[in-house]
Image (cartoon, rainbow, N blue to C red; front, side):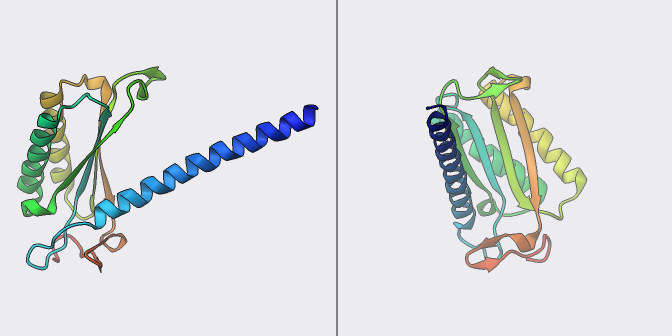
Length: 170
Protein backbone atom coordinates (compact mmCIF):
# COMPACT_ATOMS: atom_id res chain seq x y z
CA UNK A 1 0.00 0.00 0.00
CA UNK A 2 2.76 2.43 0.92
CA UNK A 3 4.66 1.71 -2.29
CA UNK A 4 1.59 2.24 -4.46
CA UNK A 5 0.94 5.59 -2.83
CA UNK A 6 4.59 6.53 -3.31
CA UNK A 7 4.51 5.57 -6.98
CA UNK A 8 1.32 7.52 -7.48
CA UNK A 9 2.88 10.56 -5.78
CA UNK A 10 5.96 10.26 -7.96
CA UNK A 11 3.86 9.91 -11.10
CA UNK A 12 1.85 12.98 -10.12
CA UNK A 13 5.06 14.91 -9.39
CA UNK A 14 6.46 13.90 -12.78
CA UNK A 15 3.22 15.02 -14.47
CA UNK A 16 3.47 18.39 -12.71
CA UNK A 17 7.09 18.75 -13.79
CA UNK A 18 6.12 17.80 -17.34
CA UNK A 19 3.33 20.41 -17.40
CA UNK A 20 5.70 23.05 -16.01
CA UNK A 21 8.29 22.15 -18.66
CA UNK A 22 5.64 22.29 -21.41
CA UNK A 23 4.56 25.74 -20.19
CA UNK A 24 8.19 26.87 -20.18
CA UNK A 25 8.75 25.56 -23.72
CA UNK A 26 5.54 27.22 -24.94
CA UNK A 27 6.75 30.48 -23.35
CA UNK A 28 10.06 30.20 -25.19
CA UNK A 29 8.29 29.48 -28.48
CA UNK A 30 5.96 32.45 -28.01
CA UNK A 31 8.86 34.74 -27.08
CA UNK A 32 10.84 33.53 -30.10
CA UNK A 33 7.85 34.09 -32.36
CA UNK A 34 7.37 37.59 -31.03
CA UNK A 35 11.04 38.39 -31.64
CA UNK A 36 10.90 37.17 -35.22
CA UNK A 37 7.90 39.29 -36.25
CA UNK A 38 8.53 42.67 -37.79
CA UNK A 39 9.10 44.76 -40.85
CA UNK A 40 12.54 45.80 -41.93
CA UNK A 41 13.40 49.47 -42.25
CA UNK A 42 15.36 50.09 -45.42
CA UNK A 43 16.91 46.62 -45.17
CA UNK A 44 18.08 47.19 -41.57
CA UNK A 45 17.49 44.59 -38.89
CA UNK A 46 15.13 45.24 -35.99
CA UNK A 47 15.50 44.79 -32.29
CA UNK A 48 14.88 45.32 -29.27
CA UNK A 49 11.99 43.48 -27.68
CA UNK A 50 10.59 44.94 -24.45
CA UNK A 51 8.38 42.76 -22.27
CA UNK A 52 6.38 44.41 -19.49
CA UNK A 53 5.00 41.96 -16.94
CA UNK A 54 2.38 43.11 -14.43
CA UNK A 55 -0.46 41.75 -12.37
CA UNK A 56 -3.69 41.42 -14.35
CA UNK A 57 -5.60 44.71 -14.31
CA UNK A 58 -2.74 46.71 -12.76
CA UNK A 59 -2.10 48.68 -15.96
CA UNK A 60 -5.01 49.99 -18.02
CA UNK A 61 -5.06 49.70 -21.81
CA UNK A 62 -4.67 53.48 -22.03
CA UNK A 63 -1.57 53.36 -19.82
CA UNK A 64 -0.13 50.50 -21.90
CA UNK A 65 -0.33 52.73 -24.97
CA UNK A 66 1.45 55.54 -23.11
CA UNK A 67 4.14 53.15 -21.81
CA UNK A 68 4.73 51.71 -25.29
CA UNK A 69 5.08 55.20 -26.77
CA UNK A 70 7.46 56.29 -24.01
CA UNK A 71 9.60 53.15 -24.31
CA UNK A 72 9.84 53.81 -28.04
CA UNK A 73 10.72 57.48 -27.50
CA UNK A 74 13.36 56.70 -24.86
CA UNK A 75 14.95 53.84 -26.80
CA UNK A 76 15.13 55.68 -30.11
CA UNK A 77 16.56 58.83 -28.51
CA UNK A 78 19.32 57.02 -26.64
CA UNK A 79 20.16 54.15 -29.01
CA UNK A 80 19.72 56.25 -32.18
CA UNK A 81 17.49 53.80 -34.04
CA UNK A 82 14.24 54.25 -35.99
CA UNK A 83 10.96 53.89 -34.08
CA UNK A 84 9.92 50.74 -35.91
CA UNK A 85 12.90 48.89 -34.41
CA UNK A 86 11.23 48.98 -30.98
CA UNK A 87 8.60 46.42 -30.03
CA UNK A 88 6.76 46.22 -26.72
CA UNK A 89 4.72 43.28 -25.43
CA UNK A 90 2.57 43.38 -22.29
CA UNK A 91 2.07 40.18 -20.34
CA UNK A 92 0.01 39.81 -17.18
CA UNK A 93 -0.19 37.21 -14.47
CA UNK A 94 -3.25 36.31 -12.34
CA UNK A 95 -4.02 38.43 -9.28
CA UNK A 96 -2.24 37.07 -6.22
CA UNK A 97 0.43 35.28 -8.28
CA UNK A 98 3.23 37.86 -7.88
CA UNK A 99 5.64 37.72 -4.96
CA UNK A 100 8.37 39.87 -3.47
CA UNK A 101 10.44 38.56 -0.55
CA UNK A 102 8.17 35.53 -0.35
CA UNK A 103 5.01 37.59 0.14
CA UNK A 104 2.19 38.18 -2.31
CA UNK A 105 2.71 41.55 -4.02
CA UNK A 106 1.76 43.22 -7.32
CA UNK A 107 5.34 43.08 -8.57
CA UNK A 108 6.24 44.25 -12.08
CA UNK A 109 9.13 43.74 -14.44
CA UNK A 110 10.25 45.49 -17.60
CA UNK A 111 12.78 43.43 -19.53
CA UNK A 112 14.51 44.32 -22.76
CA UNK A 113 16.33 41.92 -25.06
CA UNK A 114 18.74 43.83 -27.27
CA UNK A 115 21.86 43.24 -29.30
CA UNK A 116 25.12 43.62 -27.44
CA UNK A 117 27.44 46.43 -28.42
CA UNK A 118 25.83 49.47 -26.80
CA UNK A 119 27.91 51.65 -24.49
CA UNK A 120 27.65 51.36 -20.71
CA UNK A 121 26.64 55.02 -20.61
CA UNK A 122 23.75 54.43 -23.01
CA UNK A 123 22.56 51.38 -21.04
CA UNK A 124 22.73 53.25 -17.74
CA UNK A 125 20.81 56.20 -19.16
CA UNK A 126 18.12 54.05 -20.71
CA UNK A 127 17.61 52.14 -17.44
CA UNK A 128 17.23 55.38 -15.48
CA UNK A 129 14.74 56.85 -17.92
CA UNK A 130 12.73 53.64 -18.19
CA UNK A 131 12.55 53.39 -14.38
CA UNK A 132 11.26 56.94 -13.98
CA UNK A 133 8.77 56.59 -16.80
CA UNK A 134 7.38 53.25 -15.60
CA UNK A 135 6.96 54.47 -12.04
CA UNK A 136 5.41 57.77 -13.14
CA UNK A 137 2.86 56.08 -15.41
CA UNK A 138 1.95 53.13 -13.15
CA UNK A 139 2.54 54.40 -9.62
CA UNK A 140 4.22 51.12 -8.73
CA UNK A 141 6.31 51.27 -5.54
CA UNK A 142 10.09 51.17 -5.88
CA UNK A 143 10.33 47.85 -4.04
CA UNK A 144 7.92 46.18 -6.51
CA UNK A 145 9.69 47.04 -9.78
CA UNK A 146 12.59 45.37 -11.58
CA UNK A 147 13.98 46.57 -14.91
CA UNK A 148 16.67 44.80 -16.88
CA UNK A 149 18.51 44.83 -20.16
CA UNK A 150 19.47 41.44 -21.54
CA UNK A 151 22.14 41.69 -24.18
CA UNK A 152 22.58 38.91 -26.66
CA UNK A 153 25.25 38.55 -29.33
CA UNK A 154 23.98 39.81 -32.66
CA UNK A 155 24.63 36.36 -34.13
CA UNK A 156 22.19 34.76 -31.65
CA UNK A 157 19.09 36.42 -33.08
CA UNK A 158 17.12 36.20 -36.30
CA UNK A 159 14.46 38.39 -37.80
CA UNK A 160 12.86 38.31 -41.21
CA UNK A 161 14.68 34.99 -41.78
CA UNK A 162 18.12 36.57 -41.45
CA UNK A 163 20.78 36.58 -38.75
CA UNK A 164 21.02 39.99 -37.10
CA UNK A 165 23.96 42.26 -37.76
CA UNK A 166 26.27 43.81 -35.19
CA UNK A 167 25.27 47.15 -33.67
CA UNK A 168 26.49 49.91 -35.98
CA UNK A 169 26.94 47.50 -38.93
CA UNK A 170 23.40 47.46 -40.27
